[in-house]
Length: 121
Image (cartoon, rainbow, N blue to C red):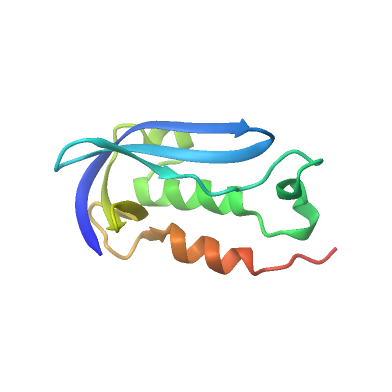
C-alpha cells in the first residue's frame, strides 16, 4: 500500500440512475486529482440499493468517517483539509488524518464488512 499526502479539493453527493454515491476529490502531493468513492451507498426505494430496512447504513458510515478523518463537523467542510491517502494498485482505498494516524477510514475494508451486515426490523 502506498501512502501519500493530499488535500480534499471537492466533495460530491449524488444519485446516478437512482443509486447514491459520495465522493471526495483529492489533489495528490505527487500530482493529479483522484476521486475517493464510487461505492453504492444506497438508492431510491425502487432500486435494489434502496432497501434501507434490509441493509446497514453505508452512507451514514461513509459521511461520518470522512468527517472524522478531516476533523470537521459538516461534510462540506472537508474541502481544503489535508489527509493521508492510502492507495492500492493506483486506487484510493482509504484516508487517514494528517496528524493522528489512529483516525483512519479504510473504505475497502469497512464497506466489505458492512455489506455483510443484515439489519433486522
